[in-house]
Amino acid sequence: MKKYINFESRVVTLPLNNIDTDQIIPKQFLKRIERTGYGDFLFFDWRRTASGDPDPAFVLNDPRYKSAQILIAGKNFACGSSREHAAWALSDFGFRVVIAPTFADIFFSNAGKNGIVLVRLSEEQVAQLLDNATRIPNYQLTVSLEAQTVTDSQGFSTTFDVDPFRKFCLIEGLDDIGLTLRHEAALNTFEAKHDEAGWLKAK
Image (cartoon, rainbow, N blue to C red; front, top):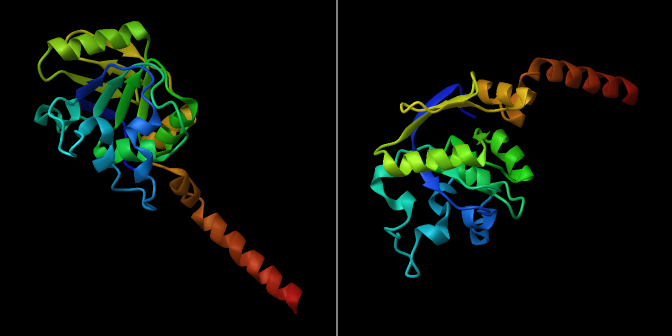
């Protein structure tokens, strides 16, 4: 998992409430066993026309947002089923930050474990950011996880809350496996003693 401290990027907006995980990554793409490759299918039903061609009206198909890595959405983002694939798809596409008034609880946990910073702001603040993104060409935000702030060049500035343990993991780039491997030496010592004890007991 990539380390995260300060991040500046152009933003993509999806000003909709209750965007569910089936829209983020439709169920027909959940057969893959890898954790990568899901970015191609992110918001698939919205990104594609009935004939399967890219829909030029959908924001993610606009070349101007190709490198954008901050997504702003409405409340209750990623509701619905608990599929971790939703976080995988967002991360694989390139999003490092999602800003919304509220998130579904299970997705909130899954996103943090996959290197995505979720920023909960008030509905009024999110509405202001959405308006800025509509009015200001190439609108960008800076999200500092270290300082827990969201700022822009137009004077917008606010703070956000984050669980201290999740903050530590994101800054250090540690997923569950990475956390475990920090204790690799101790685990190896335990395993060696355990194997030796089992061998002596068998004798």
